[in-house]
Every structure is written in structure tokens, then in C-alpha cells.
Image (cartoon, rainbow, N blue to C red):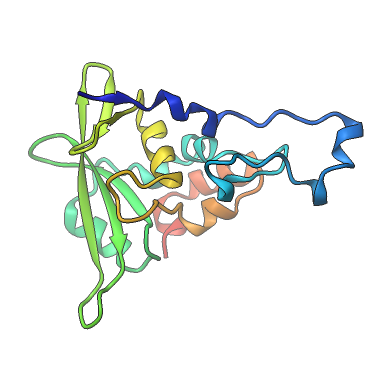
Length: 179
């Protein structure tokens, strides 16, 4: 039985702007923290993980990339960095994630098949379902489920602080975002 990940929607909801009087009470302009994911604390006008993913999909959603090229790109990146490609045989989407080297071995890129049934997506082996690829990836950026650790946005996307930055990153594409 698949479980809807809709209960996690609160993670991706925009944090409402605070009133002028309340803003002074908060420490250094930080907005409210979500108790389940403290690292997801954003400033009141910050850009959510979901918004960053939507605006930069030409960077990380690489349907024409093959397994070898995805591995070549990701092996130069930090642990948890990812790409989504399409398998040329099965036509399924595949989540490719860079994982660290164990002592004495080289780093590797693990692949997770993204299954689609009717209008839902899920990682093969998981019971959590999502309505689109953006929500699936956003969830795995803040929670592990069956992954060894959370996904990590490429550094340029992670550091983007405006929609203009995201538009620039998106237009520059894959080669300029990943090392």
C-alpha cells in the first residue's frame, strides 16, 4: 500500500510574511522554524527548496543524459548531489545520487528508479507517493526515507537568494552549475 506524502506539504508551504511589529521580535530576521526539519529554517522572504527546484529544473532534470555521463558529472560533486535522467530502455525516470567513498574505494553514483502510476510518482521500494517530480525531489532534500542521507542541491542553486539568481542559473544550465 502506498502512503501519500501529502502530510509533508507543510514543509514546502511558503512561510507567511510577519507583521512589521513582529519582525523586530525575531532574532536576526529569521522566520519561524519548522520543528520536524530545523535545517529548513528560512527567512520570511526566503526561497523554498520546492521553488528552487521548479525554477532550476533545466539544470538537474536531464532526461537525455545517459548513466555514464551522469556518473561523470556527479563524481566531481559533494555527497548527496543528484541529477534526474531518463532510462533509455525502460523510459522510467532515474534519480542518480553521488555517494561518498568508503575507506579504500572510490566514490560511486547510486541510481533509484522513479516509478509512475496514474498521476503519482514514488521511488521504487518506498511507500511514499508524490504528485510530481518537484515534490518528490524536495521531500528527499529534507528527509531520507530509503536513502542513506538527504539529497543536496548543487551549490549554486543552494546559495541562490533571489528568483533572478535562479533564472540565471537555469539559463546557464548543467555545465555551469555542476563542477
